[in-house]
Image 1 (cartoon, protein in one colour):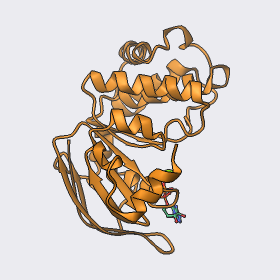
Image 2: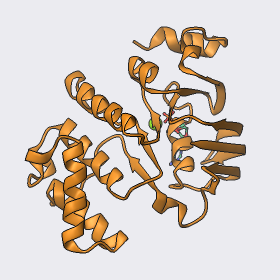
Image 3: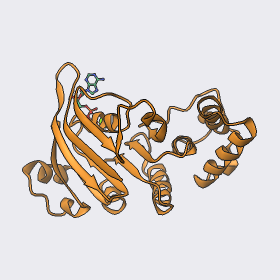
Amino acid sequence: MKLELEHVNHRYDVDVLHDLSLIVEGYKSIAIIGVSGSGKSTLLRLLSGLEMPTGGSLRVNNHDVTAPEYRKSVGFVFQSHNLFPHLTLLENITIVLEKTRGFSRKDAREQACRFLTMLHLDDQVHKLPRNVSGGQAQRASIARALSVDPEVIFLDEPTSSLDPVLTYEVLSAIKELRELGMEFVLVSHVMSFVHDFADYVVFMDDGNIGEHGPPTILENPQSQALIDFMAKVP
Ligand code: ADP
Ligand code: MG
């Protein structure tokens, strides 16, 4: 995938991203790391077209992220699963395919089942989100993000609400998807996972890109900020 950031600024009540410029090309799984409040989620929302930057431009695989059709070409997985509580795992996916992608009921079911199976949820498809584990619900939301055949999948700390066993389960599923050739940009605090999943790492430091490079930058941090960060995370 190719990411191009040119003088990206973002402001809420104060500036939270400061003049980010970066070109990254040829990687399949990019991890964004950094302390809480450093701007990871904001950057991910801008890259995925969920939010428009206050200034500058972002392109993903040569698409301008502010183009209305761009949003339809990506998938997004949030910190907690945000499935519709009154719909089964299967219906959570078919409703999206039918309402936003024009799938027939039959095709939507087929497609939804394919992705639920890929995430090892074949025996859970008729359950409501509250009747499955947090890890299963999060895997269903990954299946939902995948079901629209996105070019890139964005995940914002997909395991932050899960215990270690469920975290392992979800991260293993994401690794399998990488083996299938899918492309990811992911925010994660699980450094062991970042280390062996990501082929490129962007370290956010107080609204700036502190360091970026292959995962080996984690073993040999150059800036005090990344040295401090690596000393704090397990
Ligand atoms: P991270 O994901 O690294 O924890 P965020 O991107 O969520 O960081 O936040 C960066 C900064 O922007 C923080 O100071 C946060 O309080 C602020 N921020 C994030 N979202 C909003 C918002 N919707 N409105 C106002 N401030 C926000
Ligand atoms: Mg965040």
